[in-house]
Image 1: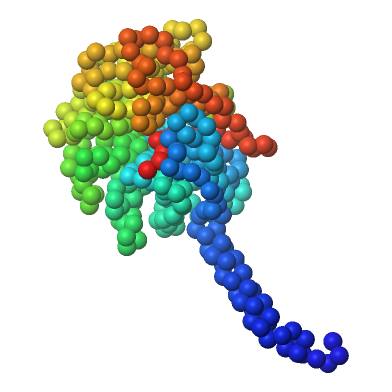
Image 2 (image 1 turned 90 degrees about the vertical axis):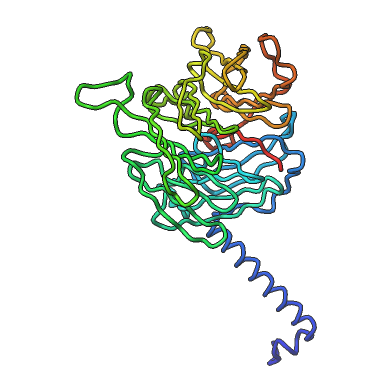
Length: 400
């Protein structure tokens, strides 16, 4: 270099530009590193036209730290996907948690692949697909039950003995509440209360053994400060609840009849059960008046209860969509040409997912009348990424 310094070989204005670019690069790398530490390399710059989104699908793996959320328009045209380096994302047995204009999901990670933090709940904006992580602390890991309201996150692990955790989204304060014996199976915030569904360590009624008591299904109704308002016993209707919706002071819960089965793809398919009505103001519990056993999923829309149930008689094992009044009157059923175990309603469309076949279906609600066979307006195959073994855990209404 002929003894000359760098400042002599490069004009000062170029030095300033190079130094500035280097600083910006380091800052960007630091931001990405920090982001990766929180959300495990979430791609927050994915350009998805969320103003057109109607429904979203969570696709995850139980063998690799990889997941994604794929968004679709009302005709099931794919709009884009949000990838995560997380495994075990979403609870395949329960409804996804959507509150306001955000989806809340708790990835669990896969031990053998040395995952990142497993104490997180991710908030995914349904306005712009931005991701915001909330770390609940190292003492609260393997979270898979999530609920939310405007201020708080509520989460717990389905592991036996795990506490309920309340996280303040504004201050980061964490509060715990020990739960009854057994494990939580679903959390739901509705009617200014948190509902914690759980089951004990017994066995399902259908598998009763002489030396093991039958499983019981319990529900805690808590206020925002985790004080108990009411307790429910659903044991006579089933051993656990993993899917429930609320409308006008009534909870509509699917009580499973026993242990869960898995379909051929490895995706969970809850054993069918009964629909139970829980009146939150009085504590009254009654079965849904119409015979709708073998229910898999429920949704409430425009004064009607939508129930997807398995057709145990049909030789193909197809599903049936039943639509009834909220009080149990005027029930109509529609035979479907496919299986279904996930349901979401957005606008005037009803969407169903068959996790085993990796298929999505869209139905026009206005076309459902008279109890005839239902024909989908749209369908789409939900292909797995190349080289990975993933499964659908949740179907949820998307878009703000």
